[in-house]
Amino acid sequence: MLIDGRVDVKPDNSLMHRVNARAEQQVELCYHCHKCTAGCPVAQEMRFGPDQVLLLVQLNQQDRLLSSRDIWLCAGCEACATRCPNEIDIARVMDALRQVALAEGVRPADTSSVKFHRLFLFLVEHLGRMNEAGLLGAHKLWTGNLLADLGSGAVMVAKGKIPLVPHVLRDRAGMRRLFSRSLHPAAADSGAEEPGP
Ligand code: SF4
Ligand code: SF4
Image (cartoon, rainbow, N blue to C red):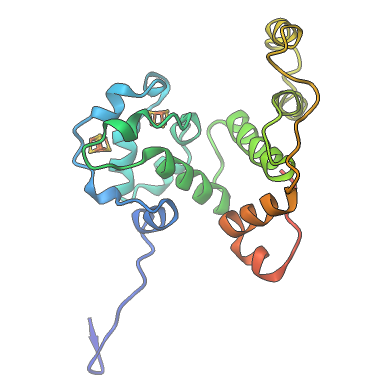
């Protein structure tokens, strides 16, 4: 639009623009060939599935998408990215959608997955590595779901599949700086401490 002889360029605040910027992807390239969904191991559990998630991003359907379980169910396995003819990395898109949902305080459909996600990032940020025992224990306490899978968990601990003592990265401060730059750019600029999960 021309105002006083100048072009009035409004910032693009669409969901697709914000997701593309965070994920460094071009969601508009998706032409819905369905190859990603055909290979996704959790598509059966999703309401929309990967290619429909991208369609909702293209259509700016923010409320429907950010409150759905789909964005929290993605396991980040990258099977979709290897099949996509347009090289769209949907795992990164899903991660960007989670970040937008958390930043905008959207009430999630699946609070258990959100808690898992936040604890996972918190542990990696502060230990430098994943600690499965810490993650599962903290998740059980936070969700109140103390008894689920207790038997199989004990078997895995007994077989040494879940180490109880965490392996800790030596340069943990470096890892925290990495997180600050990618997830909390404002805090990184000001040198503020990160919040807990
Ligand atoms: S494989 Fe790629 S182009 Fe095809 S539907 Fe999935 S994201 Fe879109
Ligand atoms: S990365 Fe996510 S959306 Fe893609 S195939 Fe794996 S679980 Fe499905």
